[in-house]
Length: 328
Image (cartoon, rainbow, N blue to C red):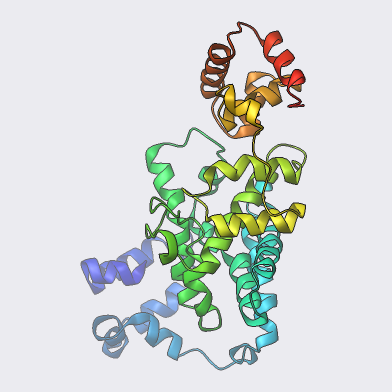
């Protein structure tokens, strides 16, 4: 802050700010040293003629931490994962879960040991950019304002920038920062599409989506239900090959079964079939909305379309249809 004030308003303003915030925002002892050094003309040279960060880091004494060993990188990534995930109750163990699922996808895709290690590390640190997102925004599950949505969408950018500044983690930056890119080019933060998204980034996108949806609610959702739920994002948000590898790794089959021919002849979309199936299980409209991660109004629209297509007029008839066609 003092460096910013110096650049914006000069030496005097920086010293005034230090005095005003002494004992509140700034440590009194540090302010005392700063004010003493500020009397030396050479002190201001780094701020005025050099990159301050490089000059300050050059003053740092050597420690054993400087020689980071390869074996320590995994521990560092795990520590970062826990640090980020502990920020909210909803995200606890999220990054480790993404790492586990991503590694399983990578193994199905035949990645070699080196790439698998890189993938696991990138998964562990993919959300480190969330440290820059205010807690109040992170804990809001819906109804984010447009400005809050933009703040949340910046976290992959922050992830990439943070990792680029740490030499042992620099190679993870591009992959970790791509976990919200969509294959149709409408993701963030770079707006990459298709094969322009790094393979590991495409894997992370699938793993992140799967883990996020499975953690919805108080109890984990069954893996088979989750892969069905996110299937509609394939080809828009998610890569088909990575999704198929997810399905094979978590439920042991190559693809999730598609609706029967009878269901297709009735004209119901896959989402409408999911709504009817959950309705037949006794879920209310708000519970269906929560399970499918959509709004209550959207559920009502789906049911209206179902009633119209099946020529029925009530929930009881929809339940009877679901039972008759083995949707439950």
